[in-house]
Image (cartoon, rainbow, N blue to C red; front, side):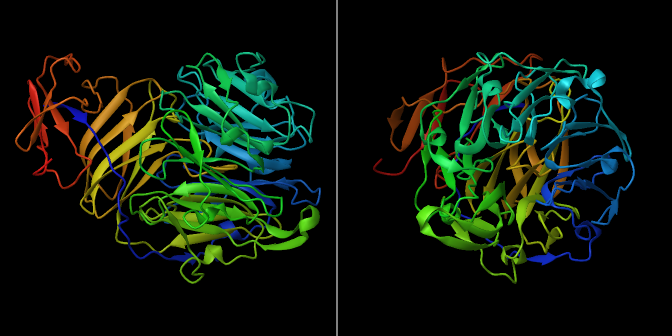
Length: 576
């Protein structure tokens, strides 16, 4: 039987479970000091294990460094790749992004270089990569630019990955770059500043991140910089509008990046912006109002991540698998001076903030359970991924002027689900796809969303997958994938505690998601909704259709499904 889902959701109370981490100090990935500015988890060889790439800069000593690539051979046993194109290059690398630009089934690597041309490495399978030349891929590897960050994204939803590069005009007198993929893996730099105003963006840009903040199916762009940050609204793939109103683009800041995530489980992407290198400047946190506008959150008690700790990067993750997004902030170590306010020493204590389930957060300070918050490191990035395949997200931190660090989560009793996507009509990496899950957590109906992204914060990539925490829910009632192509796939009754791979398929039953109309009639303790005329549904195979409904109020019992017909009966309490 084909089903169509009517879905209403609520904010859940947290499903707490004891969580702790242990430092994996003997792992090979922490043995190599390298002036690491950014990092990414990625399964580059398709064996089901997360591999690790670390981008190394000059660690402020003007000495170029080799980047690091580590192959995960299972269970968290890493093998350093010391030969080949990636390991051979000596560069001042600041950013990195993985994505399958040629749609051949394996992710490729772009690195942003501060004082030289950027580099693109084609994945040839196994541990083999080829450094691409301008004749092969275009000026994407010859434009130079003082690049500090980059992110893959299919902005026009044509099935292949395009690329945005964030440049600091203080390093080179060049604007930011946008490259369009022609479908064969050759890139053309976009120069039309009227339709694409971000290509005229000069200034001290640090990084960029794609996210569909208005839920129209097209990814939008946030550009972090010193001064006023920039937000560009995608106009259906044909161009962008630079947003000029609202706090999000008018607050004066020294921003390192931006992390999109639905922290309040209301179905739209909110934005956290880490600010640093300026004494006394707090971080910025913007709640999506659902209408294309944002509200700046200012309550430091409810949102302790606003405190000024000299942030370099951030990332949303559900580290405790309780069904809501938590936040990690990488903070830089050092002594900083600002105007007349004097000098302040920043101890480099990273921030881990647990979502309390009611939209507020608590900062984790127990260094025994959470050794990553102890301080003392010059941490520029933190990436999260399940490197030992136990369902619990682990943390790697990229450290400048010191060894990198790896923190293994000891696990908890909460359920989880990790979703890998493979595009066919959409780009193969599925970047820009949105995954929604609905499950009953602690007797509450909880809806969560994740977007597959090439940047989770300032030059951080948590792997090309969607990771969900599910608390005590042993089953996901409904899983929905919104592909960049426009295809929607719905899967029902999905078991938890697994890695699920979904291949894009156009052969799907019709799917619609809508709220019930405001108008109804009441008979006794029942509200009666007339579905006739609300919307017409036709199954292309001629199969019968039925509807399912979920209530935002868990005290109201609804039939899980009901046949097509005239009326939907909604029970309400006495006296209503």
